Image 1 (cartoon, rainbow, N blue to C red):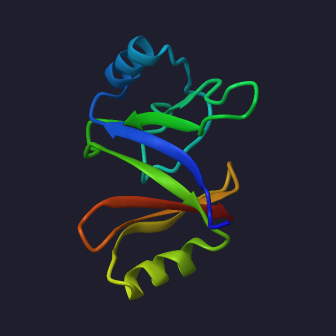
Image 2: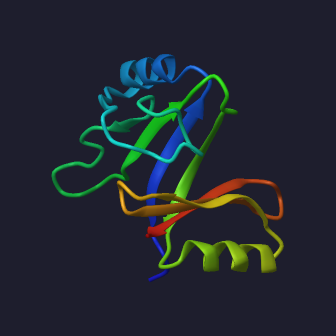
Length: 128
């Protein structure tokens, strides 16, 4: 099997409004107490979707965050063993690095963003 999608996120300038919207639309609730990289969202303004998987494990964890100084986007993250290596490979295949690696020591996680040759934003995430 290839590397799995491990996380999704929606980032915008008014994360509280976005969380309200997606909560109303999909019945999601959010936990805003966990740390995230400042490259992704303002501290305390990122909400991980609570109970994002069903009891049988179907579903992908995700979050909604951002802040006034963050451009809006939505993306998915693919789990990789080494974020820097994945970003270098993406570049060698015609992609463009957008961010990272960016470390979140409190979560033991490193993330990066790149665009594919057609400009689609993709995330990669791996251990610190």
